[in-house]
Image (cartoon, rainbow, N blue to C red; front, side, top):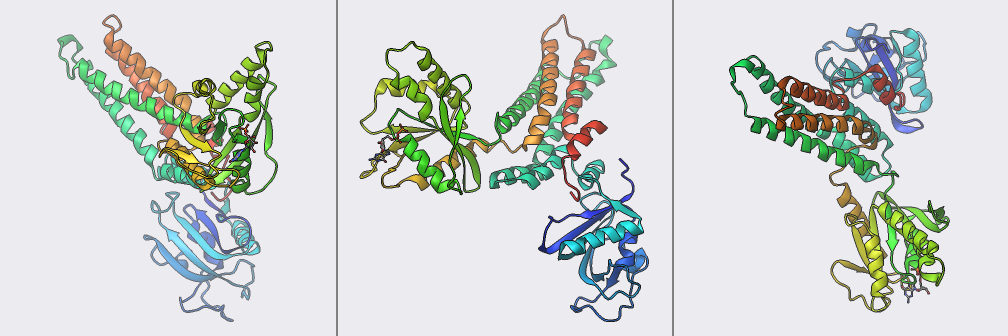
Length: 485
Ligand code: GDP
C-alpha cells in the first residue's frame, strides 16, 4: 500500500444529511482542491453570479499553511470554466502533524447531498493529484505516523460499529488512549528491568549486583500480574456470544415464563416471537429474546423448558434429569447474570438449594420475589414483581442493567482488540513466568537467558499496540474499515 500520496474520500455517512464531509490527507491536499475552490466572505450567503476569485494554486486557497485554519468558500466540482453551479463549503485545514492522520489534511464541509459529495470526490480524483482512499486508509495513516496505536485504531472501528451506549463508551475510552497508556507503562517497566539486567552484564565476573534479585523479581511479578489482569478483561469482553445472556432461574411455576413474556413485551422493541433454542447435549428447548434497556443490550433466557424434565418426570431412568441438570448448569455457566426468581412461602428448600448449587459462584445475581400482586414486602436486595398486575418490571430492568454494567466496568477493551491481543498477552505472560522461574532456580539462573525472555515479552506487548507489526496484520485490521475512515 502506497502511503505517501494524497487521498480523498467521503467521510460522513452515506445518504442525505444536513452536512456532508469530504476528507483529504497527504502532502498535496491544498493543490488538490484549489481548482474548485472560491473564497467567500463570511457574510456572503448566496452564490454570486460572477466569480472572479478562483483559487488556482494552493497558496490561493490559504496564505499561511503553517497553522490550522477554516476558510469559507464555494466549491464548484462540475467542471465549468465560469461555474454557475456552486455549493457552500467550509474548508478546514490542518498542517503536518496537527490533524488526525498526522499528515497535512483538509476537510470540506458541504451540504450533505450524495450527488454533491460524489461530484467533489470524482472531480478531485480526475484532476489528480489525489486518489480515492482505500478502506481504513485514513486511520492507517494515523497509525503509521504515530498519532494512534493499533488498539486506538481498533477503537475507531469499535465506535463506528457500536450498537449500544455501553459499547460506544468502551470504544471511546479505548480511543482516548487508556489501553495504550497501560501498555506503554508496562513496556517502560520491562525496559527498565532489562536495562538494569544488561548493565550488569559487563560486570558478571566481578560479582557486582546492580539491582538485587529480590527487586528484579518484584518488578517482574508486578508486570506479570498486570498482564494477567488485562488478559482477564480481554476474556470477559469476548465470551461465547457478543451479547451477554441473562438467564431466569427458579423452581417450576414460580412465574418465570410470565415474567419473560412481560419483559420481552416491554423491552424488545418489536413484539415478535421469542427464539426457541435447543440446548446442546439435551433435547430441551428454551426461549430467548434480545432486549435493550437504557442502551444496554442483552439476551433474556427463560430456563423453564429445561427444568421441566427434572421436575416432571418421576421414577424414570435418571437420564432426562441428568440431562436437564446438565442443561441448566450449561445455561447458568454461560450467563452474564442470573435473575433468581423466588416465591414467598411457596418454595421447596431442597429444590431451591439444587438450583443455587448450579449457579457459578462468580455470576452476579438479581433476586426477584414473584407474584407480589398485593404486597411488596421484600428485602432491600430483592425486587418484587407481579405479572398479574404488571408491577416491578421497570425496577427489574434497571437492576439487570446495573448488574451488567457493573460487570463491564473494567472491561473497556473493544472486542476486536480483545480477540487479537489474547495470544500475544498469553505469550508475554508465559515469557515472564519463565523469567521468574529462572530467577528462582539457581541451576537455571542465566541473566542472558533471563533478558531474552523479557525481550520476548516486550516484543509480544509491542504486537498488541503496533510497535511491532507486519503488513499482514495491518491488512487484517484495516480491511475491516469502510472507505473514508
Ligand atoms: P414458570 O413455570 O416459572 O415459567 O411459571 P409460569 O410463568 O408458567 O407461571 C406459573 C403459574 O403462576 C401460572 O399459573 C401463572 O398464571 C401464575 N403466575 C405467574 N406470575 C404470577 C403473578 O405475578 N401473580 C399471580 N397471581 N400469578 C402468577
